[in-house]
Picture 1 (cartoon, rainbow, N blue to C red):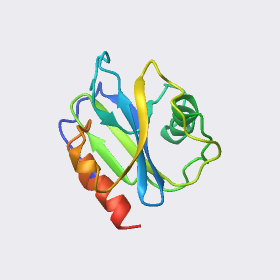
Picture 2 (tube, one colour):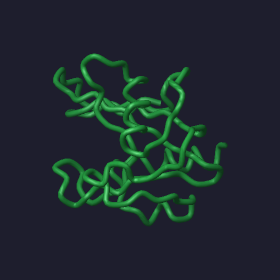
Picture 3 (cartoon, rainbow, N blue to C red):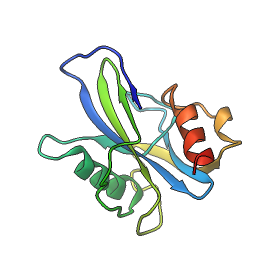
Length: 140
C-alpha cells in the first residue's frame, strides 16, 4: 500500500522496520529533544545514504539502532509513505539474530514490545501506523 502527498524532489529517503515477534511489535520512543517527531513512538530505521539501496539501509539501521542482524529483504516493502519532506519504505521483519536493545540512546530514550491492545493508547509518529500495526498483528 502506498500513501502519497506532494511529490517534491528534495525529500529524504527513509527506511523502517515493523519488527514483529508473534503477537507483539517493537517500537522505539524518540527522545524529547529530537528535531523531527520528538517524544513519540516510532519504528526503528533511518535515512538511506547516497551510496546504498533502501534494503541495505534497513539492514544497517537495525544493526545500528537495535544491535540485531536481519537478512536483506527480498520482497517489496509492506508499506510506502510519501510525504512533502520524506519518502519511507517499511518492511515487516520477523526474523533476526541477536537480542533487540537500545543501541542508539542518543536517538531513542526507550524501546519496548507492544501488543495490539496497547497500541491505541500510544502517541505514534505517523497517523497511518495504528492501522498498519493492527493489520500486521491480526493478519499474521
